[in-house]
Length: 216
Image (cartoon, rainbow, N blue to C red; front, side, top):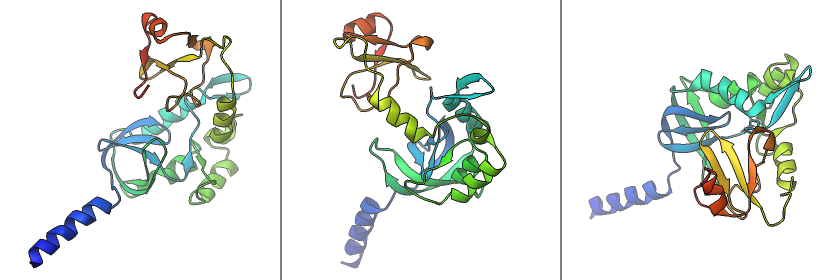
């Protein structure tokens, strides 16, 4: 009887225990990773979005890709151990992760590759202050915080033709089209200057070489 009760306890504990992703780091962007096969969003930090512009002395570039590349140089293929804090609306594990005892979030914010996400936590507020004082990374550039950028992108721009609202986006995953109402449609920006475009139908998008985003 004891063994049966103990086995049931272990099953219940395994069901409710928070995830603890662990494994080699694959950098998606400066605050999002694949770790041991789990998509992880670092707790308490917010990095510029891929495609988000920043500039210094009139030179403009993709701040999200720049920040991602810095983080990739630092952490790609390193072994990370994470502690889950939450799960976000995109089903990513929100976690605090360490590499060799170093808090990844603290390292990234202190280097100026992301901001402290003060809406959710002040864990990295002092790291952000240090980066700002020493004008490191983002603090040496003209760039709006990622949350403000996402909000502006969600509000617009609108499709030039109300009958052609499918977004053809270009990312590291290739040419992807997003249907209205899909998971990331609102936060997907279209930059026609880099070859992205609007489509009227899914058939038109596929004929042009775009493929459907996962989940629609």
